[in-house]
Length: 144
Image 1 (cartoon, one colour):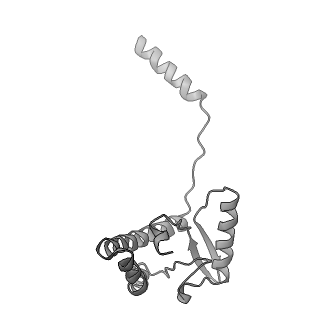
Image 2 (tube, rainbow, N blue to C red):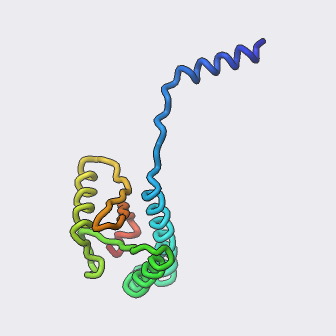
């Protein structure tokens, strides 16, 4: 009898909770996040290795010489154009195009409002483009 009452009490508690909103995951965003995470992992592990053996100078050398070829090989592997850009780019080949600039400015405005930045997919010129913010950490600021 006590087990039954426990179960009945549990059912009442569950019935009284508000239903959880089901989160729908956009498959394009999920695919973009997977590619971005794999790319970030490959780049950051190589960068950390360069930094541990050569310090900031080694990291700069890695970024100047090996980061773009590594990104290009990942682009080939994933059959996607992988690009990292910023409103404050150093390398002219990382300059944002007009769509990227609009997304970066929107992210900047969202940050100022204290809003959470979210990855997104935008269809432009007949192709899907995935955007996800990369927040600079203290290690990144050694060079950037």
